[in-house]
Image 1 (tube, rainbow, N blue to C red):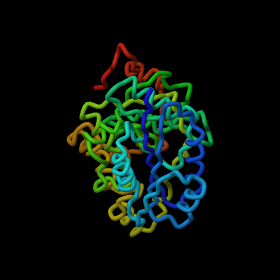
Image 2: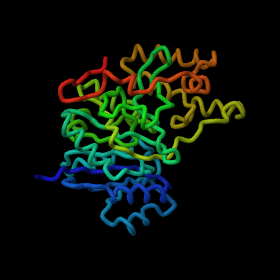
Image 3: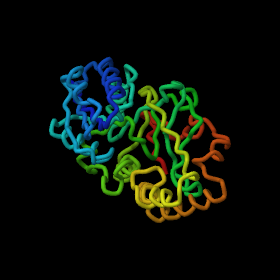
Image 4: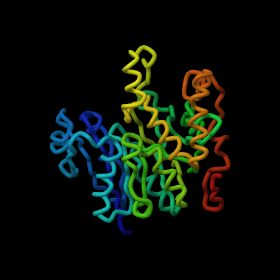
Length: 315
């Protein structure tokens, strides 16, 4: 049996210990009949990240940036380099990922079983390892865009691969043929959140988006976004209108909703609804949303579980 060629791509900036931890877990993975090459795009780290990688993982390939790439351009550079090796798959990951030993092999097996599929891992918080996050966002115009389920665990998701509308980019296995067909992430509109538009674009081109629940990755929880109300007025203006990569950026919100949604029209409608809900205190992303009941994804996505006889396409 010939080996499956996988190139792992991760952009980094000043997270030396997290990156080393990620690479250690990858090295411990079960990779029978899988040949892995790792590309790290170090975007101007000043904490010795590259030097530490060279010392502990000399087989890793390091591409150096100038500190202005951000997530999307950094990932794109890695993907472009990965394609030169003519791989079967490109595994794009965040550098705070800790791989379960069978994660990579499960992703590959799922992609090989279900052709023309992009496959994401089940993302778990590393401090609460049974808690699932950023899995299976679903578009709800009435909620103001993609709704993220926030109360799910390893026991509430389907046990078989399931189809989703968007795969968050922490750990995604892209067939190289999908990348060649669709192109790279849009770094101009999405400097920091290119994944928000990338897999939906692939889906529009006929690629199925699957999450393989056996492929588990433990990730650093997202930092809480707080303090906007306490900011001085001009700081608020800067965060809203000038800082495209910040969590409060209106341009970021607009692009993610309009260009990452099912259509521009529905995206525009959802963009406005988001602010209405925000004013009314009914923001699905805020405290109000956390107080709402949430069904297990095993029920919500029952019709989206994929098997060889029933390849359900989401509407």
